[in-house]
Length: 208
Image (cartoon, helix red, strand yellow):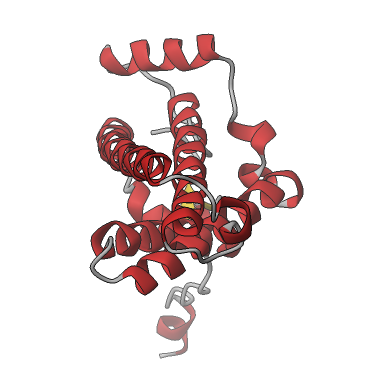
C-alpha cells in the first residue's frame, strides 16, 4: 500500500493557462469608454436629428467633449492611446492598404497604419460636424455658446450652415461604414476579434 501511494503522481499546481499567458492589455479603460461613448453619442445625434432637438444637441455636446478628452489623452495616455503610436505618414498607410489587398498585411498590436488614419479622419469629421452643429444651433435657434455671435446671421447663411452640417454628418456616417469594414477585414486576416478586444482591452501578444 505504501509503495502504491508513493507512485501516485502529484496534483498539478494551478497556474496561468496558455491562453491567458498570451494575452496583453492594449486598450486602457478610459480609451474603451471613450470609444463606445463616442459611437453611442453619434448614433443618438444622427437618429434624433430635428425631431428630438434637445436630445440631438446634448448628444452633440457629448461628442465634442469626448473629442476634447481624446485629444488630451493622445498625449498623456498609455502607449497605444498616444498619437505617436498610431499616426503614420501617408506612404505607410498606402503600403499597408496595398498589403491588405494582397492578404499579407502585418499584424499590429495597437492601431495598424490604416486604422490610425481612419481614427484621425473620424475624429476630424466628428469635430467638424459638431462645430457646424454648434454654429447652426446658434444661428437658427439663438441658443448655445455661439448664439450671441451668430444671432444676426441672415437666414440664407443659416440654411447654408444646415446643409454643411448635414453633409458632414453623412460623411461621418460613411467613414463609420469604412471603419467597420476595415475592422472586419483585419479581424479575418489576423484571426482575432477586434471588437471584443475593444470591449475587454486585451489582444494576443504574439503573431499567429
